[in-house]
Image (cartoon, rainbow, N blue to C red; front, side):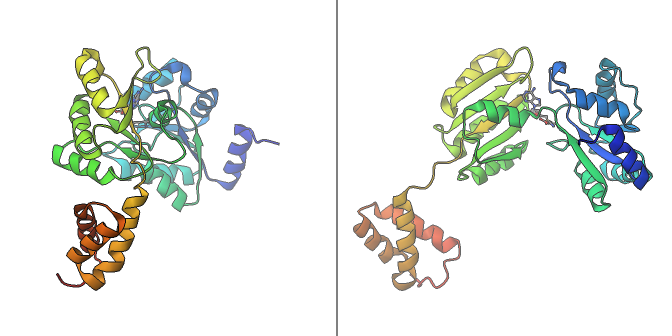
Length: 300
Ligand code: SAM
């Protein structure tokens, strides 16, 4: 038999602790508000919101009169402590962000962590999450993916960020702000190569939802030429890096074996002859092995 919200609230009241609900809200289309989200927001003692004015508009639309209080990046620690006191005192609390699932590039982690530390009940009430919607509709592999949040705003840090992700094999899901979109994609080309497949979702669930799918070099000019294309909200989904081919793996294996005996140069020339590959490729692989701390490597 399933417990109703009232049963659950009653049990928790008997234990004298409230429940923390993480409530997903629409990311653009109000029809995506699920009935359970409305029910929870109506029944809790208070709603912690990233922006109480924005939450107020949503609550008004669904005729929800529950009191709200602010929970955002600038008061997160104090607000989390205060909300946990409320939960310990038996009140139930719902957390909402401006849109989508709380905690996904949005505040909430400190509160959930603290609530778990106090063994309080935490329940997620599902709603849309832009990254997951974009991933599912991207046409890129969904069996393994990483959500990597927003790229850094400054160019140097952003280039490094993309370089660190360049060899990852799984699909990568990122958020990006409209005014950095093109600069960010240009940096992505430098690190991932123009051939890397990407799916860019704009304005998901909204009237002007649009998609830009193809290689980075194909997609950037399209975005650049369409005026409206750099406005709105965006999710970037990058295909992972192809697995290092067998040849490279073999070069790697032999170079690791030979460098400690023969040194870098002689190993590179020998491995190049054995595998009939370019000597420079073997040399570069050897350099990397040494940089990564190839212990026992003979001095050159
Ligand atoms: N917590 C939210 C979620 O579950 O998706 C994400 C919040 S994050 C601060 C906001 C970013 O999510 C936007 O800058 C954009 O990259 C992405 N986003 C949110 N709504 C979107 C939409 N309707 N279409 C495309 N991207 C969206």
